[in-house]
Image 1 (cartoon, rainbow, N blue to C red):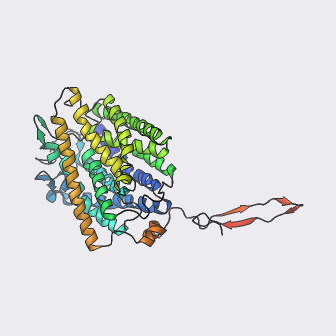
Image 2: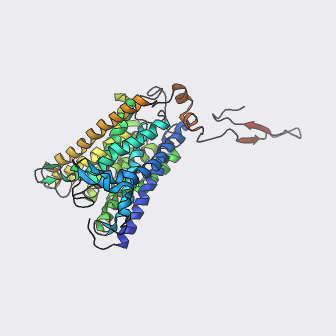
Image 3: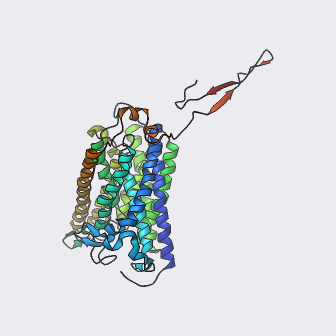
Length: 451
């Protein structure tokens, strides 16, 4: 650990960025909640809020240590010196890197851990028992995300002498270490892979592919997407861990790629389906944000636009694969996060301004990027499969058919997102022959019918 001089500006920026990333999880809850059917939206939001509670505690207890402790085989860190962060608390003024307190780094990475685990829930909408989800969160965060963060974000010589294999050890030719500035592999490829595996184990929703399962509240979806975009500036630019020129152009790249992806997705919809949709615009924004996450420091602003356009088009087509291949990825975590994360990670091999193919570099960078992406994808798939097998062996993971048909909100939470049971309205029929007809009072049911 280096002890230099605290920068108030850098510290303020990193803490602000951490808060922006933390806000992304409530934004995700709105985004996912609006995309589900009305009788499942509260459960969808609760899945994100449960993650906020559970992962916050796990991060302090041992998560930070597994992610950034002394390296063990390039896969995870030894948490023994970081249990409860007690040893670190004895010297809260110690710095991470050159200019920020180590606890600012702890806070920033905690927000990353929370949003990553919450992303997985989008593949499991409408059908997973809430208790099973909470157990899954504990196991997946501990066995998959914390080690993944070590592999990708733990650099040699910072918190510990040696770090993870993706960041430091994977090597081809003169290229060592995959570029993943803000989490394309550790977060999006990881969560997208886990979502696919968990959805396959959980099975399809009743009526999947046979009846419409449209988003019930596009206003909520658009608001959630806006909050995600807002928070993502902290996600990407905050990963510089300094208020400097690099953070500034990362901010611009994040803007450019996201805008281009919205355009790419909407044009794809128009050509394919004949119309533009608000869901497409919101999904395009997220696809662009995902794709630029690993590459935002490695490409030019023009490169960011190209990555965004490609992501918008490819992800718009990828979300339809679930109907052709028969897997029920409820809210398109695979089509957006897995595919978008892979695109952003691999395109560095072409568009990276230092050693990308289009800038005179050889194939080594592309091979290293692919090795990191597919290596982490394999780790996530294997570990998530083991977790799902364990859960299915010891507890009921999926709700009953009756509860799924009547709505998971009531079954799991004894609540509904929209309680209209006591809403009343008054209708006047008007005046006939000089006689005022009394008001007609009608009670609306929760299904919108009349009694």
